[in-house]
Amino acid sequence: METLNEAIEKAEAEAYVIYASSQDPDMRYLTQFVTSDPLFYIQKRGKEGILIVPQMELERAQKEASCGVISRGDAQFFKFLEDEVSPRRAAARMVFEYAGGDLIVPRSFPLGIAEDIRLFCRVTVDTDTVEEMRAIKSPRELDAIRTAQERTNEVMAFAENIIRHASVQGEELWYQGTPLTSDYLRREMHCWLLRHGYMARDTIVSCGKETAQPHNIGSGTLLANEPILIDVFPQDERTGYYADMTRTFVKGEPSPEIQEIYDTVRDGQTLAEEMIRPGISGAEVHNAVLDHFTECGYVTEDEGFIHSLGHGVGLQIHENPSLSPRGDTPLEAGHVVTVEPGLYYRKIGGVRLENMGVITKDGFVCYTKYKRRLII
Image (cartoon, rainbow, N blue to C red):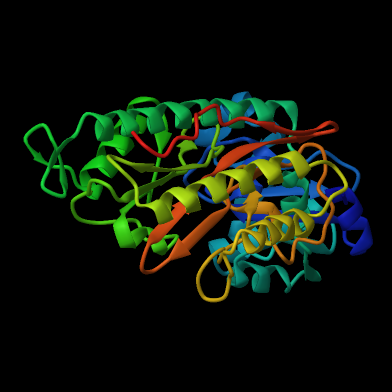
């Protein structure tokens, strides 16, 4: 894994610069500072990175940021503002003068600001160095992700409990005197997570034939004897780290086809988790699960196993590494990955099971402590 300083040297530049708020995962990773406004972070070759903040944010940033912090005044922004034609041009000069030479920037760097900086020096786009650095998690990051998964286990139990206590009226599930809908269950899960310091968006609560579409978030009343697929991926408001989990349930009696699919997916997930270790590629694990499904009679064309086996999780819900047919890079200790095989058929429905855990020198350690059961 290339370090940021190595990337700067390789590009024959003097510094790396990012301009973003903490919604940008690279910025959050480099500074651990939470801000809704975009700020400049500059790392000179061979030096510690610094964050440049308005005076009003200086004291808070000095306490909370994991890097050095200076004010815009200390970086001479207001001096340059007297000479330049606009605040943006003054900011560009500030960056150049502080960095002392040519720069590398991430792909997400604003084009307009890059063009202003190019009036003073060469600007080169970096090749995702920070994204690659983020893939190997530190002990601090692992603690944050493990804690997020614990809350995810709890909110899944909360959702399952509502389904379990729903009554069956005809083909529909009813809860507390009204039809139990996807929207209701999703809102209840989101409210539970907010009360516990987490945010969730686009949580999937699909049912019946909807479950054949992996990312259909679901709508309408949940049904008895049909698969109910719940995929929730909350973010810790405090740390910024995500967790991810999927379970498929049936309230009542599943069809023989869904029961068989569930058993096959569960066994595929177990197979994958037993294979994962440092040195193996994501493609090898994905293809082994695909072979398992094929041997069980589930051929994949436009139906079946139609997505990747898994992905990295951290400050983004989808990040490196990839457990996919194109995931040729060897897995490493410190990677946090999901294992989420699924089978989907339009006339039957779909089943997905998703666990998340860390790769250690000894293999895969699962953070998802939640029983796999279809019938509730």
